Length: 158
Image 1 (cartoon, one colour):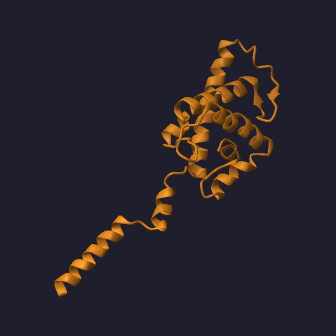
Image 2 (image 1 turned 90 degrees about the horizontal axis):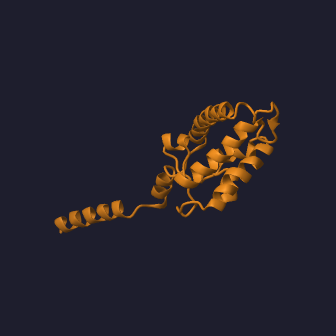
Image 3 (image 1 turned 45 degrees about the horizontal axis):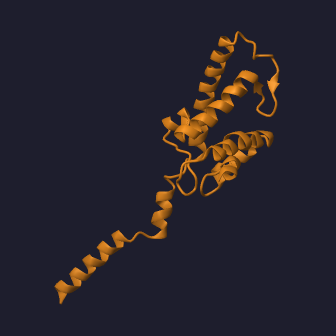
């Protein structure tokens, strides 16, 4: 009888290890979403790359694109705005990551885990970022406050 009881307890412990609770899923899910600070560091890395590429573009075009005026909403020069938009749309569409995100192991996907379509990327990287910039970058703070770490640009692209 005692041996049967011990065997039942051992079987129960094994079944508890096999069947995770909702708490276990929530703990695991925290690893799936890039948080505010991780995404901010990735974005800063991307900005450094963008400014280097914009400088290269400005050099190649002999400064023709650099009119000295700032691009509205993004508040940067035309070469930086061109590189910014092309960089984020191209990298996110082709690789689902920018170089900053690659270094920090963050990937951009739909909620269901699928790759973003070109339309999704356009809404996220162009429309969403322009709206966020127009709203004084405040929508980016939502990344730190939402359970799935999403900003306005993420909601727009689903």
